[in-house]
Length: 358
Ligand code: DNO
Image (tube, rainbow, N blue to C red; front, side, top):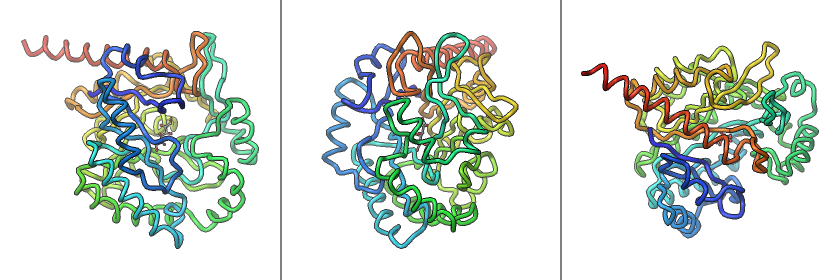
């Protein structure tokens, strides 16, 4: 387990690399050029500047999250060719600076979606929250406005220009059902996987969050069956997964321990966090501690340990605790606690193995 921490970059994050340095066990920074619009080439100069800064703090830069996929590629429209070429160029450029894993997703229009950024928990902290009935009944534009106002930030994937184009985007997706979206993903993978292979990079697709359709838009990376389909498209080691226990696990039909047992070897990157799911389909994020949520986090770590998992791991969304003012889900404190829990579990399984082999 190679422990990492996601960071949003200089001037774009309340957390600094100096802070992260003080969390035990963190080896690498999960980074990105966060101001880069989807579809544009990540130039060598820009990459070098960020990589040098991160490395000067003693961290590796092996994992990028995300190189976002332009909407034209997901829609499979006439402009996709140009954006796919740009994407290939970014892959090659990142490889030159030692990047090993690129996380990306294939969710139409929205990235992860929540209805509340600062939902109060019983312990006095706040956390991200998903209210199913609200998403089922609200105009997406309204939700985006509400959430951005509450957090001073747009939803991920929600660049302001997208908001202006929302009607147009939704119209374009009227033609796209799940089968068509799979076709467009397969087309994209057939183009980029050979480039990734040559560059020594693993493309690790992130599951849809939440892992079911919202606003009538298709969502296809939702569980083990999606993984089987992806392997069918290409069983190259470069066609890989980001295992995200909180995203995929937000659907009670996904047993994340079984998924970890079966797919860890195809997942060079893992996001480990907990969510508490309610019977009505709502869910709230919680601490990483197994007992606080619905995901068997300790079972997942056990499954990884049993397979001698050497992939990159990061804690994921944390609660907002001790009055921290931060990006929703991406504060320092609760994610640091998450790391200590994950490392503690790992050490305990390690000790157990050593004792058993005596
Ligand atoms: C949420 C994240 C996602 C993830 C992208 C990957 O916090 O896990 O936004 O970075 O979906 O492309």
